[in-house]
Length: 307
Length: 307
Image (cartoon, rainbow over all chains, first blue to last red; front, side):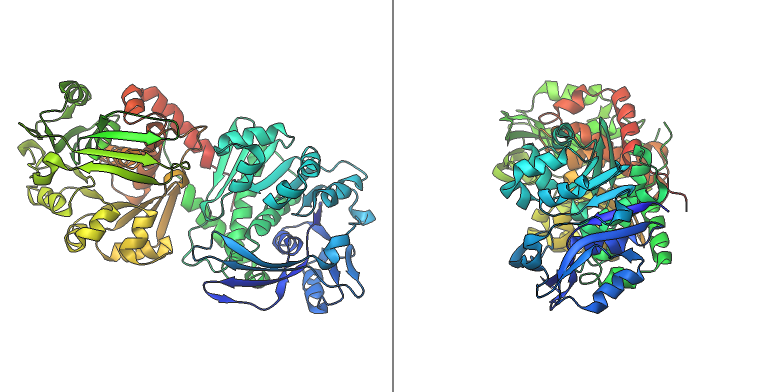
């Protein structure tokens, strides 16, 4: 079984959408990536940090999914990273109400020895220096390194971000961030400029409008599944990344053709995530549902024009 | 050869985009639909009206494309419909600067006798009573009736619009208009409500984010082709409608499966339209380019997950 190393926050979120609000619930990029990747036959580990206020029940939830949490540091007397946000009516934009870095402020990631030879590394959205530090600790070159980031790091740690971007094979980024990073409005031009920064593959996430995969002159598009209701978009991008890397790690095939399939798997997983608050849907999700919805993706996009 | 009857404006447009501006150029829904449909093996006619200020050269352009313009009325002493608009930087929204209805104000469409048995009728965006009047003049029930409309008619002629919507098989509408017409934010729910108003098929156009086709519980999605530059979106929706109805009229097959192909053909035609100002690109377009870009649509969306 191939190894997937995940780095990302494990956190508390408090979310408000037009449909309701939550108290502090389980969240964080690392959590969503891990839960999503657990639907694939991979050996995965999360490198992260929490405070001793983090419930044992949440840790159990991850280990029950066969996620190795030996490198999920618990800081005694520390408090877990907390984010709170309110989504606007269209669910496409949100305001951050509160961010408490807490134990994340001094986070030094430690890659467990048995994952220093991981086949696939998924660098979730974190400070670029934390992402770099993880790569520094790998004893062999991973088959594939995927990085997710956000505009926040472009604003406050751009040179460090550009350094780590040079070292990765795939970057996942949303449309506005791709425009900011490249200075190009056209996503085709943006993807070309970002490829020139290092990553051979650029995934541009457009939320409800799907995702684009760029590689050299080629491009692939996966729609988001049209849903009756989108309840809470929190974690959708990370869940996408978990499906994407989970599938690539499982198959061990990093060709462009297989990466197209991985984009579909990622979109498929994300389509569940948004159906309930936070991680709720991903925790209840069954493998049979995953397969059944893949069929919907096929009929959603397949056409039969003979050329 | 099957017959396609097109009703829609033939007009002058003056367009401003971030990339430049035009004087009065050839425009109008009927024009775009006709030019786009002319790439298919169909016998087509445009029912419309212009003033005697409308250049002979534009009329020749339509007849050279084998479009029957015997029902394109020229009003002596009248002025052609004129629209002027300015697009915002993202090209997704625009301000109307000027609208002069002119001869359109008293337009009474007259369906030529040899098109009263048309196989496919494309009702371009016009007053719902004009659209109804065309249907009243058909001597036999067309195989397929497609209607395009816009928010303007929902605001000022809703009951007439609902009456004509009842009589059509397919409605094409953009996402915001679908939300306005149905009162539902979710496009899945909006499409269900609009189907209940009459049309068995609902096409929701999302501009650069593609188009959705709904039919009963089924849904199909066609992306817009990612382009290096979108120059001018004017007429893209009408060009889409022309490709959609042109292909359906050519094949004479109105099954859901074939309608999926028609959505791809429509998107393909629209991808050319936006590359230049106004009708410029559609006029220069070659059939070989159309075929070649269809291959791009295939590689853009095709994936190979075995289930």
